[in-house]
Image (tube, rainbow over all chains, first blue to last red; front, top):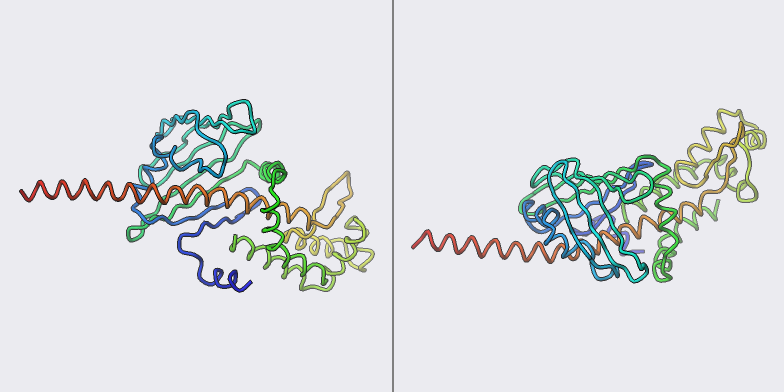
Length: 175
Length: 125
């Protein structure tokens, strides 16, 4: 509990935060210790993107990584995962590309409309603040995404979450 | 996660600061009810009860569903847990990516520095 209180007052400098900004928006923030042009390169050059987009802990690996990063260009990432015999494609279109500062793309692999992802890169004294904004077409689309994703949870993650939610549960229980 | 939890707790505590709303949660803990049922039970106007339910809904403590002309209210805590679980998993996924990206940014920075030093060295000679 005390640790959590401390981090609330002084958030970890390079910590990842997520905020559900509205019924259909999620916002992720993270600061990187490097200039914006370098961080932007890592997001837009396929040979660099491949090196971090799917860390080992995901269990998946790239089969191919194609990205034509310019306004109107498309991308297509194909992954293999032990849980799926079929390759898993993710694809969409770059709606906006402003070198060094802003990327907007669609996520079109789903049956229904996917979110639109906007990433901004803001340099401050040699560091870069990255803000990822995912806007779903409707509240239902985000709710559905959450509902479908909550099934495959591991026990360890649930335990962590139980601790997190103990506070909330207690406050309701008292009422 | 910290931000997210903070916002949820703020909304929850604000929702729970009112005796009627706590009563509504207690009531819904026993059984689901329509807004009309709740208004009658707590001797309130329909509009007044709608407002209270709205606050509880905003905090994720109650969910409502309209079937025909009746809006049914249920405890939303379960939904809230699932949402918090999903958001936390989503955060962990990005955090894992970013740990890898940190390493890459360090590497690219060093490369750039090396190139720059080489270029500067050439200029001096």
